[in-house]
Length: 104
Image (cartoon, rainbow, N blue to C red; front, top):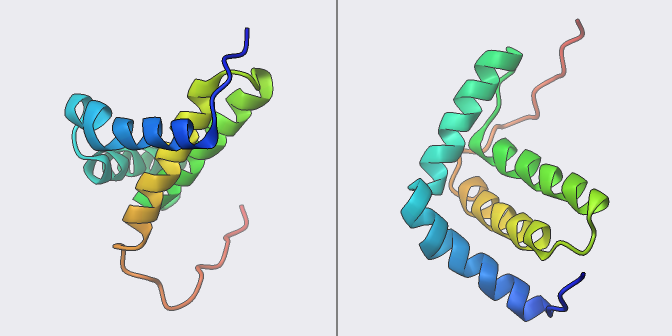
């Protein structure tokens, strides 16, 4: 069953999660995203940034939404990841040029 929510409720809930609930449970988002980036970088042997983590977690939520479009949690969490990513990205130093992709 799909629970109807409006965009304000989704955004308000996401704001509550990223500023209070989950921050209290999981700690500082930037620190966590940086740690995840370090682990993913080591595993993939590719440099991953904290803002990349936010984008990829948002994509994860979008993939989940495709499987269950009516699950409001996916929409809320996606907004939360984007908000955290936006904050992180606007505080990260910017590269002067985009890095070239290396061929295997």
